Length: 458
Image (cartoon, rainbow, N blue to C red; front, side, top):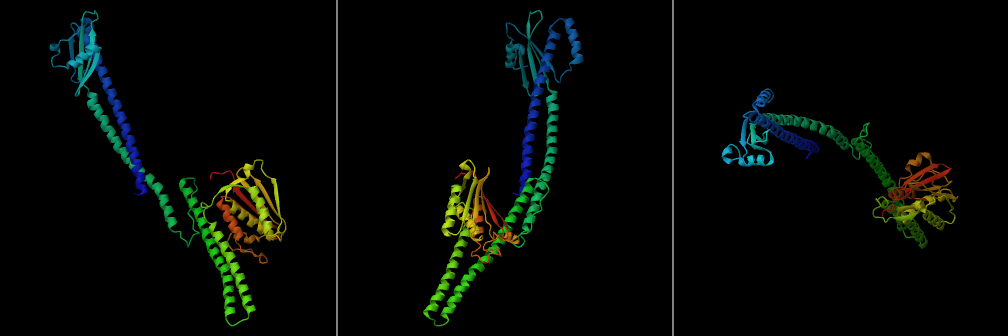
């Protein structure tokens, strides 16, 4: 079922239920009020009838005059008076005019009501003013208001219900269209976007409603997709080039060695060159696999509590074990008072690899000058700063530093594959962190790592 039809059905159903309950409540309340009010009218007429018929003639004449002027006679109004003798009303006196049970109720309780079809009865037990005798006085009449006015009320409610139903149907159609139309517009715009034109974006509106949030969210997704597509294209191009170079060298050396008979020394030299190129190919392939691994969402990785200060000490030791000429200086002057503010949730091996890559780059590209590693914390993050005084990165090339296999134009004198920084960035993103790089050519590079703190749910 279409969403538009669901909205219409939901609105109409809600209205129908509410209207039926509301109309039923009104009808029931007025019906009860009408019955109670009509019985009171009959009771007043019963008292008046008793005084006119049974009391002093002079007083009765006055009441009769007042009754004619102010108490209209009800449709099919009848009066019944039964004497009470020895506390009872003789059955032969009542006859078939009224149910005996009703008369006995009035006799016992002093008053009572009774309804038969459209005829209403109200009775009282009346004692003469001189106290000599008692009577049962019953007045009956048809309730004109119930039979006619309630019918009019019922028709009025039904008519109002029909008009209101038409109104709610029209309103539902308008509301559903006003909601569905923008969604249809978004769907139409989305269908125009494909891998060939990922630069297209949805047109956001100047409002803060849900549809605008949907548009913004979709545009953000397109930004990520476009970046991913461009990165993938660049990755494939660079990877193909990087892997093709050692493969070409291996094939060339093998072809050269096999082209004719050669001396043992020539064969050894050729095999040595093949081994060197194969080793480079192996390292690039491993780096490529590691980079691909960190592209996952991290759910398969085991996360635990990690003390970042201890991690940095381990990184320093690792870097200096790899190359004794590398110098790393640690600044712990901004450590927080609470050690809990140095704990993050993460994979210790991956975080060590990420920070080690960044520190190694700093040492390598600064010709073994000291690299400063500072540690601090805010209310939300553990912050690691890695600063070197090396060759830096040209400003116009900073936007490419996260592309796999990209190397800045001023790094030709240094060995490397362009894998370290993209790998480190992927690891930091896996930990919901941030990695920011600022650099100035020939002045050095500063890398800021922010890891969220306090999320220890494992």
